[in-house]
Length: 494
Image 1: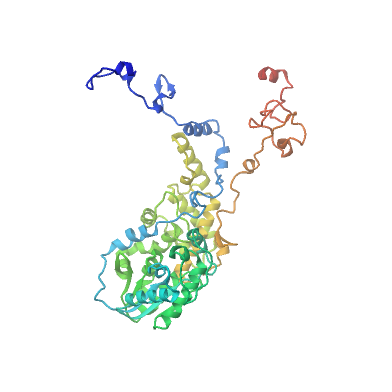
Image 2: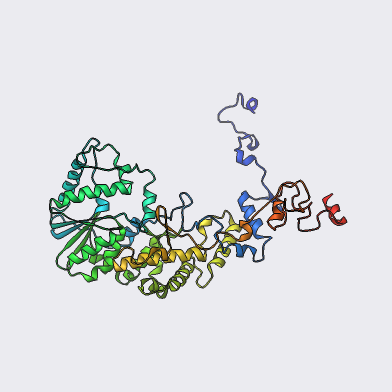
């Protein structure tokens, strides 16, 4: 090739067959009726699964997750519940309904501050004492409350609660437990220190003492502070105007839902601006009725997001009114668990555009379509009945907490959670993850005829198969036919 090019002008042309070819173009491409087709191996594999199994075997199997945990609800990276885009939902579905306000020249009677947010707002310098750090927080809070007559800081507690799961997600790079005293010098990076809930509790204790000495009211919750923040704000707003300083979408959602119980202005302030909660409620109009349920069911700190289905899109669909009857179950404080599970399952059918179709059948139909078209991603399939049931119970628990403004208003162990070594953990499903036949998949490597219990296949009561090392499921006494004993079989083997 190089000899042919020697002495040629840069303007010279060359034959197509002489041009450099990419490695991908050098591989053999299959042809059908002399027409080249481009198929990846997984596409062929998936089609091979579909074509020979037109019976109910595949459909029966897809009634199980076939994965260690429901990938439509849990992340394959860390096995934690899918994290929802709460901030995006809050922005597009709530905040953008009204224009931000300038509260610079407007005083509010009371400022309620989210203590969990506050912990991350003050920078620390290594070499400072803990009291100096506490004084920095004090100055920051005093600056926030300069327009208010009263300031209330509400801190999280870290006793066992469904928020444990979210805390674990955040503590992968935390430091060890530390005890702090006002005169001790701090050397640990702030991020690592705050990723440890025990360390947070130590700091909160010091901050609470410092704040109270300067007439700042402090409320320490047993667990999650969100409901307490809203409860405190609503109680104060019955007498005068209130500003809530927080970033969490959960707080805004609860404020919007409960705002009719107040008589005075209530403002929600974030780093992006301040918003009149009552105006947001009025802008939502009838859509507000779906707000609490949708925010819980589509993903929050204690309920997993649904893979491939965004919160904002589902909120718009839920507001269409097609699931009102089933949504009402989640808003009913007296609903039974069976009713919640049935309603949740029906809502999942609606989410996957197949009302009235069993989730197992939806999984099978989607699997068949995706297998014929290309790569199947398990997370794109809907959850199984068992996984949907546990998701629905968790969503009901969270919805009730927000309605009643009471964290852990019901026993989490009865609603999709189990209490483990590290606190409450979500129950993925109570059903087996795969059929018994798959869970007991066995192959042997016998040198004999597989006729006794030394053969692992024989011992487990299953026939030898092609995956068996020596017999290959065709030349032993434990295969699906009289391996090698009939003349017909011998002829085939030869």
